[in-house]
Length: 170
Image 1: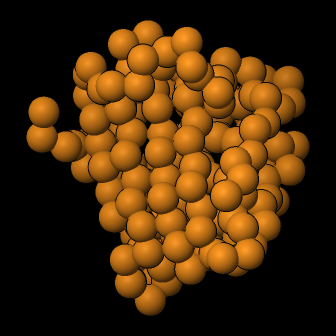
Image 2 (image 1 turned 45 degrees about the vertical axis):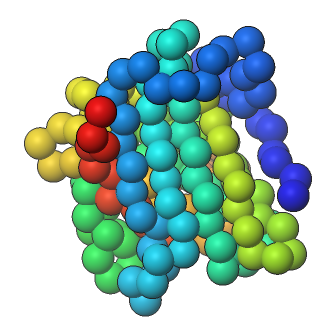
Image 3 (image 1 turned 90 degrees about the vertical axis):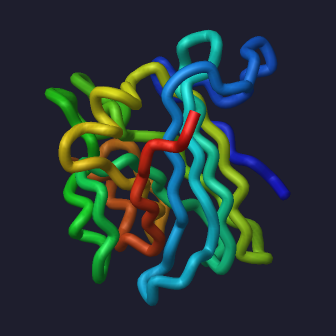
């Protein structure tokens, strides 16, 4: 398996300098496809360094790059538009002036076997304030790669997998 490393401002992908145990808030979710079948899992937690670690394990996805974003509503119905837009705050999408959104993450990569094994670190999102807000949040995997420029969502294509993020027991 190969992992994709993309440099985004305030984002670390290879973090051997940071402990990877959780120390604070944690959310998890079951990754489902458009038919509602479980195809993987999502785990997001605060690390001792204060960064938020995002881990996505998925199967049955098409080979190639896929946009991965945290969306503003904790709902995964139908074509997953029920999850709303990216968690954006007052920011622009991607690697443009005024960006990125707090919910923007680097692209994930799926090998020919259909497996995504994804890990990213960010300091732009708050689990307690943004992921566990009143209407919750979701993690979306898109059909194509994010171009990090197109507004408002990086021209990453349709939503092919979704996970409603819920607070995990401590």
